[in-house]
Amino acid sequence: MSPTVLVRILGLCNLVAGALLVWAPTLVAPLEGAGSPAAVLAFRSAAVLLVAVAAGAWVLPAGALRPFLWLFGVSVKLAAAAIWAAAAMSAGTPQLWLGAGVDASVAAVIATGLLLQTHASR
Image (cartoon, rainbow, N blue to C red; front, side):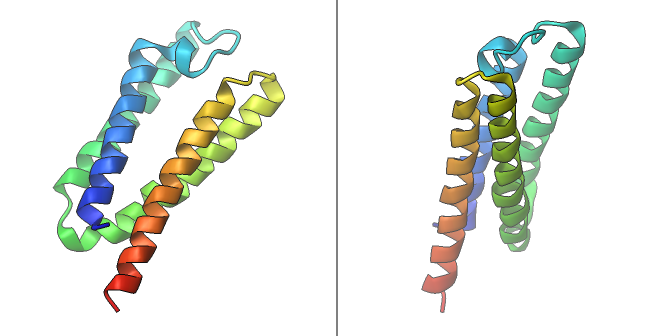
């Protein structure tokens, strides 16, 4: 897959996640206290970051897409998957495994696309 297609996939995932964090935070993170003012502020801050990453990717020059995708599409998504998994284990909330699975899946799709494109260009 081309980096442009991969950036659009990552951007769409980040926009959806950001919207869910703003409009349905207890659906995304069904934890005790998720509706508290501090949690709402944290969710909204994370949503702003997700949307900024999505928007930033769409305005980058073509040569910057591959490093951006390795950083934000693979590394950050794998770190987020690990955080979701740790939260699921510590809170005992099975719904949080969905977040881990989604982030790990996005990282796998992007890494696979980048690696396939690298091999195809050789």
